[in-house]
Length: 343
Image (cartoon, rainbow, N blue to C red; front, side, top):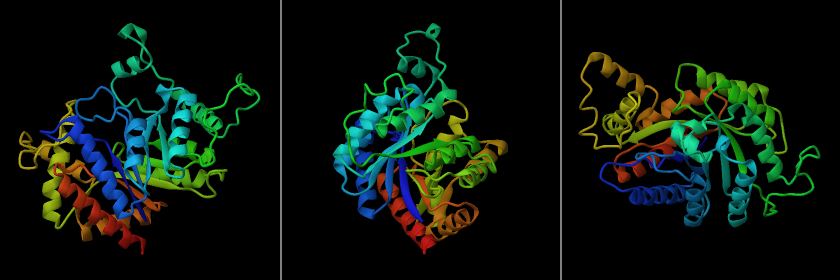
């Protein structure tokens, strides 16, 4: 099994956005040194907490700061943009770093309705904020056509326009999703599929989505067989007790996110201080059950169980840990666990 990282550049208490981006660079370089498969960055708009608002810019910078690892977006929220512009951006990136560029595309908003309005050039609530989520599959088709320099004859611009530059090695395009319908769409297009379990962790949905993808996959010019991964929050430490302690920061953030309040990661000593009732603590335990948490040995067992339930050969991890040294150690231990499962 392979391992990748999704970095949301989530702010930690006491640091600036500039320092958060420096930590993202450090983590990408560390992942590169460890030999991980890929490192993706996310798209979030208008947030004081998750500051990666321009994943294509950040990914380009990370490509220049690393040597081997695949760098990409998890993802570009395609319903905000013209496929032509996205194709040209990622073709330029691929010309600069051939074979290393991933383009994950999704249909989520990546922010609140006001940012959606602003991304469309609107200036007030009266401008409307609905995105064409129903058109997402056709947007992917058009993106692929621009990538391959193959606009169909029926396209009004066919024969008159191509997405520059013309390149040999194209970006690796992934469909991001949280539902069986997303899995089926990726399968029918013959594209790799990344399921965001850290967003959609309702019982059984991940399993249904991945199996739907595998069962309906159609070979394409991109893939001969299904290629899927799942993205989960993972916190690994020297012992189960230490991992449980480190997880308090992320659990604190998730607890308050469910109450529409965005929080920075804080020191685990201070985290969850306002959780008091039995019902609230049960909510925390339920959240914890959606993570991979524990020592290397414990997490190895969790990943082994995951690999027996799902036809996947890759795990992508979010490592929401307050201290960057502990974050690096968590990735290191997780990589060892994944290797053990793959033997």
